[in-house]
Amino acid sequence: LVRQREHLASIWAEAVPALLLLLAAGLGAGMLWALLWRLPHAEFLPVAVTFPVRNVALAAAVATHMFGRPEFLSIFALYFLLEVPVFLLGARLWRAAATPG
Image 1 (cartoon, one colour):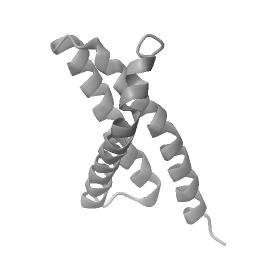
Image 2 (cartoon, rainbow, N blue to C red; image 1 turned 60 degrees about the vertical axis):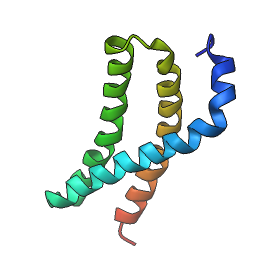
Image 3 (cartoon, rainbow, N blue to C red; image 1 turned 135 degrees about the vertical axis):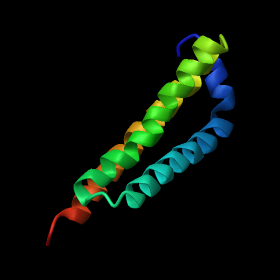
Image 4 (cartoon, rainbow, N blue to C red; image 1 turned 180 degrees about the vertical axis):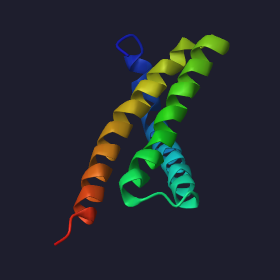
């Protein structure tokens, strides 16, 4: 990340909306999967969150090992940095909605 600081700064405005869209698509796919399997409320969120988290790890492995493009790791790190606060906020809202009262 430190070596690619300038690269990240130059693509920030384009990368963030695209990464948030990718995150939403993965989360939506996970929610659809959980709905299709009619999972109970306690298992719904963990299954839904697994999709975008797993997909970024697979994409990073493919980009670096199969295609020999380690420069993509900075994009995946940015994705992870966006993913963490979104999921923490989502987990808090999910817990608040599940709490009676």
